[in-house]
Image (cartoon, rainbow, N blue to C red; front, side, top):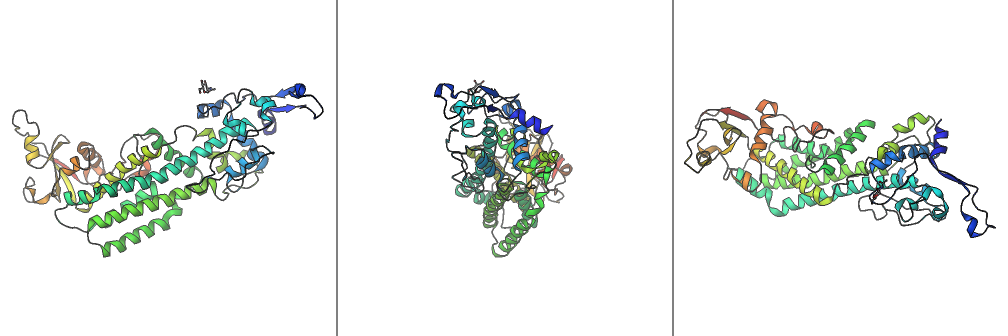
Length: 450
Ligand SMILES: *[C@@H]1O[C@H](CO)[C@@H](O)[C@H](O)[C@H]1NC(C)=O
């Protein structure tokens, strides 16, 4: 059955001209097209929708069935499926910064006379032996480009945070005195590196790209465990830094740098899974198993054809999430909590929130939210400013935090009792469109009347 499907999908021009015939009769006399021929291959046509319409899954299955899989499967596929006269054997997306993760315009010289390329002249698909290959290869190029953009953006985001002095500003604003960073922060950073935090629900392409990757990785292999050594070494590095450096600022700066290298090495591992050594059986004896191969799953449904996340969008999003992380880390390290005073405050006319502000609180969470160090359960007057940072309002003015969103996030975390780990798994599930992971902020929240 599979072989008959194959025959149907590969358009074949039979009875092509012999060298003796005139150019007039070079046109094929008899031509079999696929039942779902590729009819469009412009830059705007290389879409998931068209992948399914043109049944590219079947073409890919057919290729794997005939040729098997191999190390660096996309490179293998390109070498096999570029024209025999001019095969492109140096296609390679296995390293970030690759200069050969693209296809030179080879133009299949037979395309002009082959009916399967009718209407496709000048498009990407004409670089290959069959037009279906154009869709498959573009999917792999997009996959690489999305990962490369993540790789660059991680560095961009960290650089932007470092050069803006954000860490210094926040530590100085929130710390009444120097306090060592807690072990909890080390664990938090380990989670961040494992899960590639810096994505969020606000940019669709950015949010879904990494989710798709995780879906594929999870569907086939519990790869996440492979990173445990990296994570341990990052934690150990941090522990060493903890002994040497007493200032929170230096620790956070170093952790940020570790996060960049940790995230980038993890991205390289993902790249290796797609463009590195073979993870599939080389030759597939049971055709029903083809759909379980990496070679197939990394391209199935043209999953990466739509929405390649852009470097600048990712960098902005990562910067925001990393800043969330820094603020959350500092709040946690300093043992901040939030008391929401629901007592009705007598604001002066025309100055809503004035009294709350005078008490160094934020009008948020349905009352006056007071960020205090170990404020919940303390015996003193919480409105008293002793337990607060130098400039608590920097949370809003410098960090640009939405205080209401932060408090709601912390309140929903372990019923406001704090301490629970940030939930990246749920954040990265396909249908989650939240801007923040649950428990991104895990300080305690207590609602009361003072
Ligand atoms: C191909 O793209 C063009 C625009 O570039 C569009 O007009 C056309 O409908 C597309 N065809 C298909 C089959 O997607």
